[in-house]
Image (cartoon, rainbow, N blue to C red):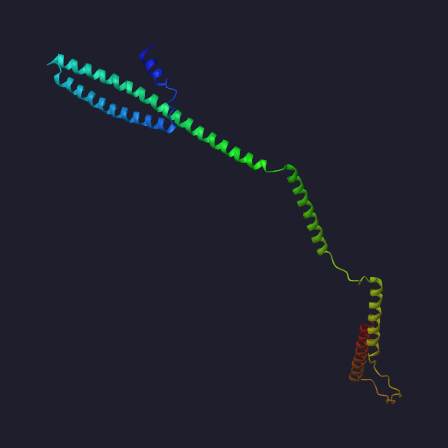
Length: 232
């Protein structure tokens, strides 16, 4: 068995040790990310220093230049390994955060389900049906009361309309008769008119008689029209 396998096996052999909480695991992963980030900065600075040293020696001191390049290669290899480790830790941290979120969501949903179950345990479906029937009956009663109030109330005054119309016509006829008796017709003279001496008709006297006759006819027509108006 490899040393790495023995390490993980030995770490999980203690049954009395409780598993860490998601918060503790996330805090440890963030600390590891921070430590590896600082190690990255250190390696990047060492790579730049070794590269500058190799350029400085150049061909004048090939042995020192080669040693600087070898150290640069080792630092670059370590930097690549740290990049891979950080990617793995970041993936693990995100997975743990999602698991923690899902756990909290599941716990809250279970809590809500228990609360809903407790509420439903105190509800009787038969009582709900009875309650809805009572509500429907009360609504019907209220509707009947509203319709009763909206109807026209008749207090014993249901008379025959034909009799009322006949009585109204009699009253109108009486009123018309009264108006007819109050109409004054023109008086007819009782004595004969005196004889007039014969005169030769002239243009002026003929026109005068024509105007007089027209005036009398107009007055008679007015009287007849007034009489007809009172009669109707």
